[in-house]
Length: 308
Image (cartoon, rainbow, N blue to C red; front, side):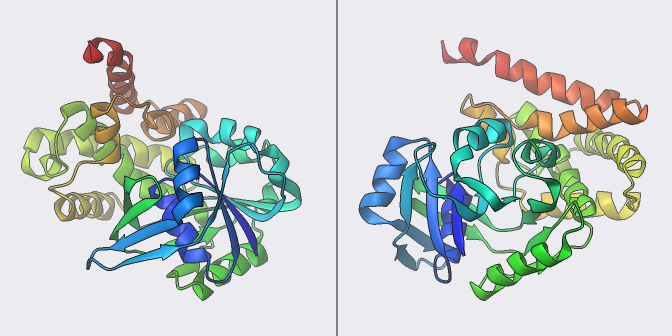
């Protein structure tokens, strides 16, 4: 399969390495430095046991490729999804499939601006990776990848999942991808914004009673919105699963917390902001998620002051 991955960051490079054994893979990135580094030396992938391998991956500047691809995987932040696809519209042919393994809700609507729904796949990844330098990635955590079709194109989702599996990725087809995305969202809408506001490690959600209560209030609103969106979850199990993640990752800093500390735009509009938008759609009040969203947006608007 001829695959383009938009975004040569940690996860883009990781999946490029995985998929390159059985597919023709091209990485597309907006950074000249990243494209140059990968073009000159390939992608270096370091595993948690210290082993390191180099993969020869083709890299091109985003927006400059003249090829069309069978599969385009989006590995950029949700906030730039539309712009990334628009600048690379030339790589999307009449049969090209788009796949998003991004966080949050709302990417499907963006992808539908570029291809019909039956050619869109969504999914989640439990892999973790960190950029050490341009074209150099540390694979910090291993996990399952799930892929599904929001439009019910089961055959397509199964075919892509099978291809991933043949490349050594623990990947399976997910019949209800909307349910899958909501399940992941419960972790993201608590761990990410709360620790970003506090500037803390993830363990604060299990260690501080008031913080845990805030997380539960965020989840309660999201559960009500999810029900209206057709997805039902156990309140007890959902909260327990979030706390288990927090305990497992207690010493780490969430991606949104790192974004705030480094004065970068966050994905809040696709996480808690998505709960607020859907709450408005279904007539469900979401005051806690709205407040959390507003606090993160306030933090973003204070970057210039922070940099002084």
